[in-house]
Image 1 (spheres, helix red, strand yellow):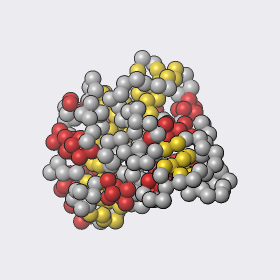
Image 2 (cartoon, rainbow, N blue to C red):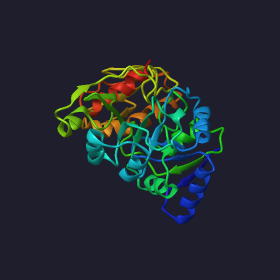
Image 3 (cartoon, helix red, strand yellow):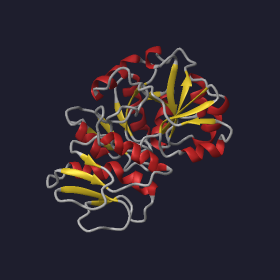
Image 4 (tube, rainbow, N blue to C red):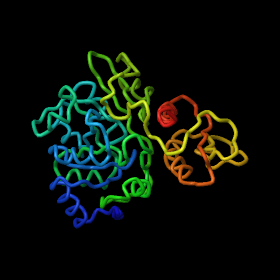
Length: 312
């Protein structure tokens, strides 16, 4: 059974977690997006344990998490437009596809020598990565294709058969996975939408040619079916139906199960999304889950992306 410990910046907890990671053991860490299953990014042993525990296909690459731009630049090539975006959005919910620089990064964890990299915006996790001194590979702390966790309880339930140590830092502030971007041949490709929107990127790099879609399924979050609860999800439902947990958006409606945001705030909706689906999935009085229409703009694009994959 997993062990949950409250996050704190004590030297004792940091030293204990650092010791586990340097021994190629896994721990669960908080970020601003979702909770991550973390292992040392410079040793293939930890990565293999992550793939095995998540039941994740080996072709699905992992995201490397660093504590600073300086650490990123030590292990990966960070320059030109990637550096501009990094300075603007890191630490934060943006992942960039960068070329491997250091031979410490196992080539088998790259795709044509490229890696997905980010600096998360969580004080506890940044401090720990800094103390370890090396990047951590840290996909979402869920079983492959299942619901991403935004609190420690959601992690606990998915890995109840393990003895994982889960660092509890409360509810994630963003609540959905990071925006994933690749820049090549003077084109910017949004592989996975997230909190950092197309509009945000255009303001920083107005001269770039934007391509919204990438067919390479080796990157995180590109599986046709993903982020899925056990129960069937129905999308764009305008009113609650019998025996269906209705997750509303906007003004309260009769018989709703939960409301993502009464004020139609998309940031609030993203923060609540996975948790409310989790609660509905674990409520035995409902046979399925239905979701109100979500505007297809800004972070709403990312919300709709997650719901579309979850409903497959």
